[in-house]
Length: 458
Image (cartoon, rainbow, N blue to C red; front, side, top):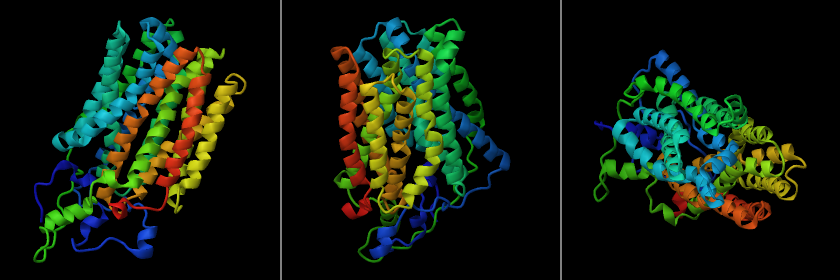
């Protein structure tokens, strides 16, 4: 029996870990129909008190609510912030790309930090970083200081975002789907509420964009409280690992061979075409999402729509993710190929951006609804990541590669949109660029949605 297990090993356990090392992966028809592994299978765990689980649910909901207001509240007040700090269009575009850059950079660090300190402690630190960043941002007198404070808040969002599913798996291995649904709903609601009420709150507090952005630090500070007792909680840590059989003569060591099989380490993941298609699809849909969150309110305002209404329109776009996040993943999991869903979402995206390009003020509610549906490519790509590997360890590798690479791909888009707006003096060229990017996004999504597994390609 293996002892001295690291805290994060529970995160990579999967049903394969209970099989002998000599077991071969599914083949034939079974391999073709293999889908995501049952989420309830995990190593034996120490008993978790009911009150601890209730506290974890509260902590997860409060954390999820705080994972997007730093972004969408800024989108609603971007014009005021630009005027107050004297930002150029390119710099403002850089600001809208900071979330993707932070998610890529600090997302890489989250697993290592969790191994060293435990997921609960890292999420606590993330909540503290969000609070500090949101408090410091309104105090900034220059653009670099504002960017630095924003990056601090976004770093906290990045590590927390990566580790939320980890916390769910540790404390609710038998209810992953249910708890993830609650967490996803809270995230979407936090996103939408921040977009809708930031401008009215700002007006109620005298019209200062600094107060309008800083008020969200209060909500983040509240989220710190339930994570304090969870930072050092180990009640959900698995108490043992399954014993590995001894290797036959000439084979690798039992633990080493089995660990390689369980983790899906059959070769460098950069050799997988499916992994690259997933990364590109993730990056291109992320580009559209960050342009929508960062620039759509400004497009509406430049078309003559009031700031209040522009914020509500962004909220409508974001709130569409609440119901669709529950519908799309199970639907996609039942399909052999997710390409048809990719095409449908791409059609909604084309229609939404075409409306913004041709006549943003003519039917703004329709354009907001269309882009809200299109933004649900995010839960779709997460579901596809879980379906493109046979093992839990393989999913971990694929998720890390696709998300980190995808976030890097999404960085230039919002910057380029801001630059094109400044150079051209309007939104026609930038929105035309977004329309053109839908084509490679759909192509990559269709290819990534084929019934493939990265182990076969490696």
